[in-house]
Every structure is written in structure tokens, then in C-alpha cells.
Length: 246
Image (cartoon, rainbow, N blue to C red; front, top):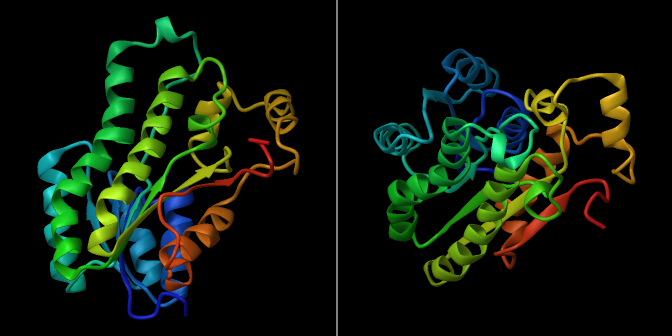
């Protein structure tokens, strides 16, 4: 019960890493608001975890404002914010990525962190406590070709994490990031271009431990960074990557 009596928002909590984080947080004692653009998926995970859910577009100011208000109302206060929602563009040369795809990747992966900060940091400051966790990627540390603008968005998230940590530390708010290697989530096919045994083998050859990450891998690391066990940890970008970035 490492998160006993804690409350948390998990964006993109309807599937993949976000669903794993929501389930682990609930198992460790937290009450969780599951936010996702797929409301049915969010509702399903919230029902599993005895939590709350809300349809949320993390790239939209009004939607994130509504999430902040709904979470504070439902949970009484917010202790933990997990910025997990993310998307990518298909693998292709950087100059061929359509402008609307570029805009969407930056809006979901980068602008969302700005919007959740805008609407939730004042609340955390008022409590002089809190933990923010940004789900970045190994792509932001050791980028692969043909995912250029996705890589850049995750590199932005790593830098944002560090500067947020420095600015918010005097207010008792810790900010960290996780950098997972690609995992068994709905985004895997997008990273691979096509999900074939050959593509999987090629990708796995770059991971020393020889497997993709799982939602449980990321959720366990997230639980540590958001718990009081990590009270002296802020501004880190923890790699959960089977050795991918070595």
C-alpha cells in the first residue's frame, strides 16, 4: 500500500502503459481518475480500479481544465499527476511527415504537459506537495531514424521535466520522467511501421534484455517515483528499457 490515501490523475489511462499505471496505483491504495480520449476504455479501467473516469482530449485547453476541476471535485484533492497520453506518427523520412501529423504529435505529447501544468500546478502549489510524472521515451534520449518528430517531442518532455523539477521544488512538488522502450501497447504497430515477426526481431535485437517493455514494468517504476519512497528524487528521466540506451 505504497500509495495509501493518495489521489492520482492518469492521462491516457484507458489502455497500454496508462492502464497499467492506473491498476497498479489502485492496488497500492490510491484513488485514481482515469482520463482518456476513448471514454469507453477509460470507463472500463475506472470500473476495474473502483475509480473515476473522464473523456479528455489532453491537447485541448477546455478539456484539460474540465479534467482538473472534475478530479479535484471527485477526489477532494490531487496528489499525483501522470502525463501518460501520447501518440506518434508512422515511421518515414522527416520531410515526408504531414504537417497535421506533426501538429498532432506536438499537441498531444508536448502541449498536454503545458496544459496540465496550467490547470493543476496552482492546486499542487496550494498544498505545497505533489508528484508529477511525465511518460517520455527512450526516443527522447537515443532516437531512432524515421521517427524524428516523435523523438523530438519526447526529448522536449525530458527537458520540460527537468526545468519543472527545478522551478517546483521550493513548493514541495517533485517532477520526474520515465523513458520506456517500446512496449506491448497499441502504439507498437505505429513504431514498427508494420507488426511482423521480422520487424519485431529487428527491433528486439537493439534491446539487450531481449524483450519489449510491459505495462507492469512501467507501472512499477511509476509507483516508486510517485510514492514517498522517492521523496528525494526529482528531475530524473529514468530509463526502463532493458538496456536499450546503454
